[in-house]
Structures are given as structure tokens and as C-alpha cells.
Image 1 (cartoon, rainbow over the protein chains, first blue to last red):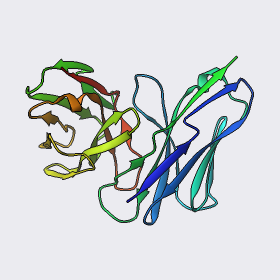
Image 2: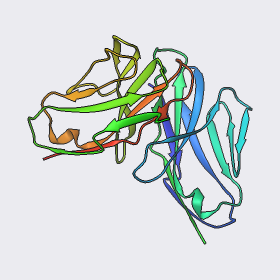
Image 3: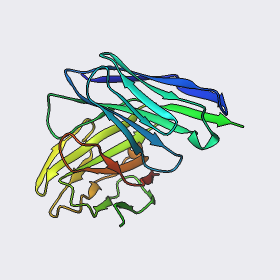
Image 4: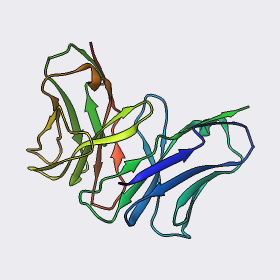
Length: 112
Length: 112
């Protein structure tokens, strides 16, 4: 059974204080690992897809990295508008239909 | 360009009643999905569809029925609502079996 564990559950940062969110996974052959951002009362918004160990992707203050067992979402010099819940999900090679297994998320709050 | 929409956004119903949640996408994506999101569980897949008239069960399908007669619509029906089905429901779509999924704004359902 595919599993995704995200840590920490909640994180409070000061504006400009860089940090990393962790996503540990077990999957029967990884097809892709996805990061989403979710604001309160809204649907998840797609950020990145990573496919193989060593891959990195960047978008503004966010950088996602992938190893064989975990992924990190690095947030550099965060701003209050980066406050959201960040979700990680994996897709396995086996099984059809593009099914994703999600973690429970890291709730990030960035304060002035 | 509306993307993916859900209706209603909020719904209160009583135990035993039938309720249908609607999902509509304008991208002509082949794949569509229904998730529920509950505290402590993250997003869990209820049903998915690879194309019109092709549907399959996800992780938590019991008590739900889906249909997909048109590519753009994917309604979710609770045939006899129970309190345990109180949740936030998200619809998503994807252009292929390995691409990212795009989520709708969600429907908050309360079953009294």
C-alpha cells in the first residue's frame, strides 16, 4: 500500500526565515511525486511534479527536490502570502487511472 | 475560461436523503476524479473516470455512485446520506494518466 507522510504538521516562520517541508513516501515504483498548495476554503493548486531521484524544480521562492525515499519543499525568504497548507502526493507505476495518494499536509504560517 | 467548477458550494442535508454533487470541466480532459477531504485523513479518492462511460472505484467508494455520460461532467451521488459522509468534496481533472490533476473549488457537505 502506498503511503505518504508529511512533516511537520504545522510550521510558523518569520518573514524571510527560510525552511524546508518534508514528504516521506513508500510506493511500489514511483511514477511521479506532486506538490500542491491549498489555501483555506479552496481546492489544491498544482505546484510541481518530480519524476526521478535528483530532480529539482523551482518556482519563485519554492524549490522541490526528490530522493528515492523523500521529497523536500524548500521555501527561501518566505512572505506572508506563502502561508497555506502544502500537500504532497505520489503516483505509483502500477495501477491505472492516474491515482494519487496524498499526505495530510503541512500548514505553513509566515508572519511579519 | 471557467476551468473546473463544482456545485453546489455548500449543502446541508439529512440522513437518508439522496444528494448529487456536480462537477463540470471545460478543458475536455479525459480523466476526472472525486476526492473527499477530512481532518487527519488528507484527500482520499472516491471514484475516478478515464473517459466517458468508464469509471472505477478509488479508496473509499462505499455509499457513493458516479456516472459519466459526457466528457465534461462527472456527478457524484450519495444515494442515502450518512453523517460519516459529512466532508469537503473535491472534483479534479487531468489530461492524461500521468499529468497533474487540477482541482475544483470544493463542495462542503453537512449531513445532519
